Amino acid sequence: MSSSSRRKFIGTVAAVAAGTAATAAMPLTSMENKYPITHHVLFWLKNPDSKEDRDKLIAGLKKLTKIETVRELKVGVPASTEKREVVDNSWSVSELMFFSDLAGQATYQDHPLHLEFIRNCSPLWSKVLVYDAVEA
Image (cartoon, rainbow, N blue to C red; front, side, top):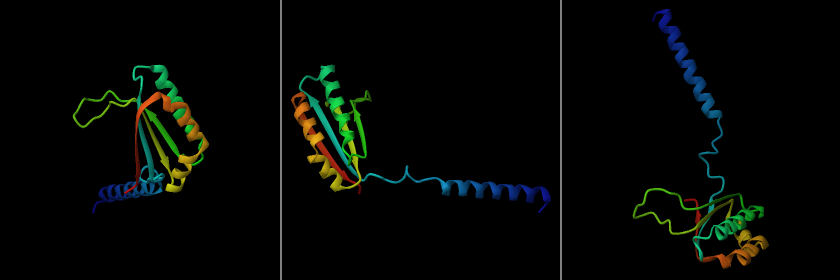
């Protein structure tokens, strides 16, 4: 092997080794499910054209982050994605919560802030669907 080829080879091996080391040192948080319990709720407003009702519901949902067992909360409205038979965008507001465990989710259900949210916001909705899931 010529010295030029050997230098190229050693350089390539060093670059690959450095890349492997860097990858191994990176945290795997994006590949780990930190919060394996999800609580997804879809709300249909009684007055779906009322921005005021929608905003009140969204504000009420965002207060639920103060509950100590809620690890993460996402609140959304239907996206303007392509219309397909399998897509249901008839709902008004979506809440997606993450919990570390089932005990944390149970604590949330009976928490005074959650019960207050239900008292204050339930007059706004006509229908609610809840999907609870545990990581498979």
